[in-house]
Amino acid sequence: MRIRVNGEPCEIAAQTLESLLTELGYESQIVATALNQDFVRAKDRNEAMLSDGDAVEILAPKQGG
Image 1 (cartoon, helix red, strand yellow):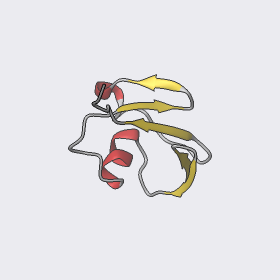
Image 2: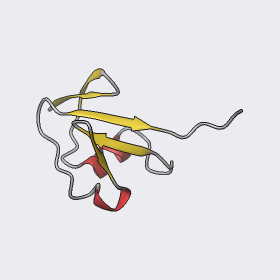
Image 3: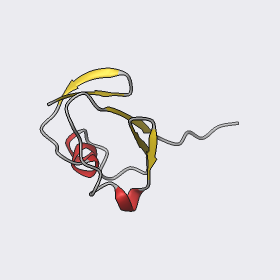
C-alpha cells in the first residue's frame, strides 16, 4: 500500500502502525507517532490500522541546548 511517512511517499507492507515502525527499522527507538495528524500513543500502535493514502509522522527526540 502507498502512504506518506514524514511527508515522503512510501510503499509498505505493514498493516498497523506498530508493524510499520518495525518495517522501517524504528522498533528499538523511542519515537512519537501520529496517524493522519492524530497522536498515537505507543500502547495503541498495534491497534492503529493503516490504509492506502494515510499520512504517518514519526518523530525522534533530539538532545541539545
